[in-house]
Image (cartoon, rainbow, N blue to C red; front, top):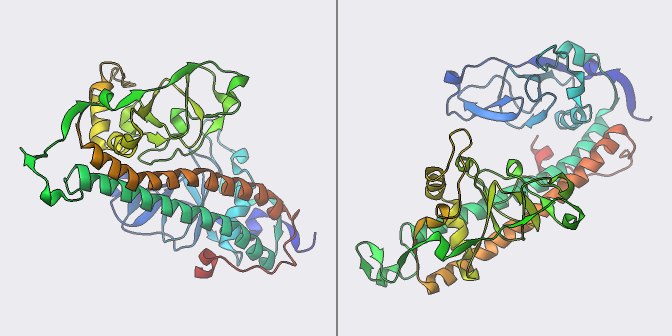
Length: 387
């Protein structure tokens, strides 16, 4: 194939084992410590200059990580010590297609040996093709990353406005509001059940769920508004409940994990989660951000049953959460301000997922040369221009 050569992995790069570091040495510095599962902590010193490519040697075997800042590769990894004049970003994408987890050499503990990895036979393109392929794939990653940053900005804004209005009492026209014992006049102490309902509906596995996605606790995100992922409905097997797009999914089992997501689709989850919606739509933004607060998570833990797997219960427990309810006018104003932000966040879920799926479909076809890039005039994305 033009522009591609048969070679071995060791001829196009050199792997080096990562460096050991104790937990005590892992400080709150700015240098990422990259383990087999990705950035796990931070240190105040670096071992390797960026850009870098790290793969899982132990633990999460064969994972591939691209690092754009100086870093410390953990002992559970291999890192590329020498790219041998090959493009680092292309190398990152290329290694993903090798499925290195298949080259386990451990007897009892899964291990990736660098000497074995160096002997893997590969078909590798010249530097011109490398850069073009990396540019195409990086463009997708840049879009995904930019969307994630936009999501984070919107999440931060929504949380800060909630605290400003309902924790610090700096809501619009607060200066002219009468307070009684430190509380705005007209606000009431109520229970969660007065403004919200647990609305999950029991169901069984089957084809009637084919228009829904499966969202179990393990793919709900921690301290973020959107889930990390979802599964096909056929993965849903037992203890199932349904939810609708826009409803709130609250992780009731091990609530300390702080999993409180807004559903971006009609779906199915398990009874390990509460499905919550407001009794009145204008309360939605206030309700969601209330449930997202650490104080609410702490309350869920306080009323949970079980030591190994603490489990919050709705009836006569979580529903009894006391809260300070603002006036209807203020709730309506807050919802009019925040709900468009939450809707925008929801829209990014499938945008990013579609970008990721398209990139993953292109990846093996570009890397293998099945899609030729030789004659393409490609403009390099910002991330590659910085390199």
